[in-house]
Image (cartoon, rainbow, N blue to C red; front, side):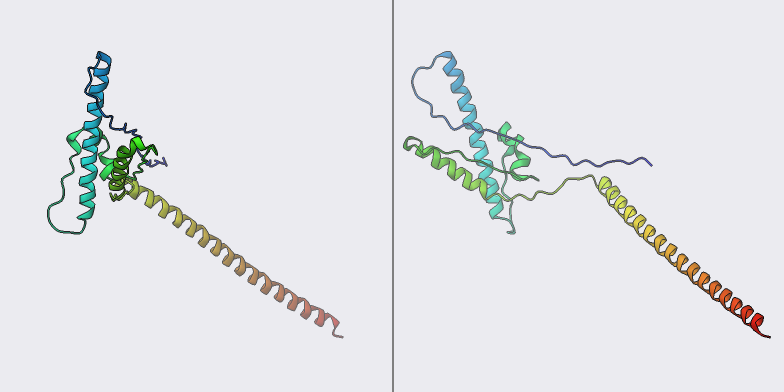
Length: 191
């Protein structure tokens, strides 16, 4: 028959979160204004991501307790919406935090470490998403193969038994022939 294969699909999100750039109050040129607006958008996304991480952290602290579940604001930015599965869904997530040893970057490094510490406390439970029909088909194929091996083993056992039976019959026939031959020899040797 035709064999259908099942496929497992996974997704990987690699995100480089730009640091929160401090904005100055000086007059900006047109290109600097564009970068300034981009920096504002990045900071908004980082802020929304921070809110999601904090909500997920609170949610993981509330696990097992009764009451309202903390709302996680994934829809506050495109970044958090895209990372929804990675942050609090069915995923394994790794976060790398890059910090600077320079004194001038102390506040940003501390903020990054606090951010990473909150993210570290989020608990996710990743399981393989598999179509139930494909899972059943895979399990049935494994069972069929197991039964085929058992049948092949039984056939071998049956063949061995048949060979033993034939061997016993052959031995009996040889004994009969030997006894008949002995009787003929004895009757011929009698005077």
